[in-house]
Length: 373
Image: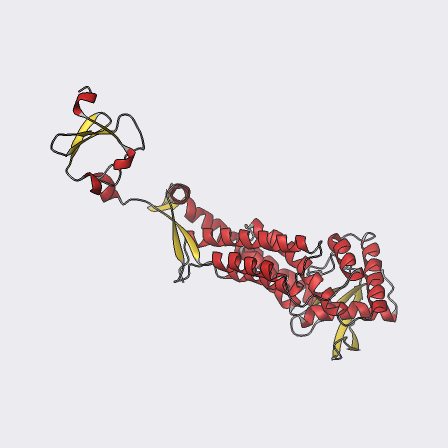
């Protein structure tokens, strides 16, 4: 595996393709198309893995670029200034800025988590034992606080649920909230969001990651809803929907959470979730055609890398490039079957075998009496 400018650029292009495919799949969620939330989730994980490994694989196929990539590489290698006999190029400057920014973001990430842990220790936690819809018993902690505007769960090993203290939940509503948040934990969403926040520290400059995090938030919510609705009765589905609606209404009264933690409840996708809940029908498998096309495009793109195609300086000094159909470049066919080559109206040399001349098709061929010398 090789990390290079080409591999980073290829990663950016491949992540863009995956991002577009995931968005297309999410758009299908608004239609009656058989797409399992788990499949979209796996596609999202592919984006995460590719960013985590922005390298060129040994089995990658190289696509030569003669115009765009050489221009990009020339820009990256352009020397800006010199410090103590050390030449600084555009690429090296960008790498330095990226590393410094990553260091700052990582320190902020650590600071926020330390503050959150201190806050948790300062609060009185309530213990609760709950039987989940999958019949598994789960013991968890929760706190009520003014620092959040919607229910949230935090923790990789020992999860704790945060409840906004401005919302009064009945016992049944509390259970639905706990079911939802603990399902996030059981499905590994708390770990994934932690890793995404960590990855954001290093890719703070990448706009695709910001868009992807919004997509994953939507995917995660749809996946958890799907897991719960599969075991809920129709009446429980309605009650679950009413509980979500109650949280959404209260969010408008306190539009911002003060604690730095991922919130899975997103009021921006409430309409989509509500439609899914009220018209729920379990989807076990994804439409085979959509599945095949998505897999081929996304996984196939991982094994291509774009490299600049250029000629080394020694070859460039002893060769020349023929521009297609330029009037000043032509061939004159002689009586003995040879061809005189003229570049910019200047005699360059004689070609004995025209079939071995690679650019003959780019030149007009004349007889001696057709050309004025």
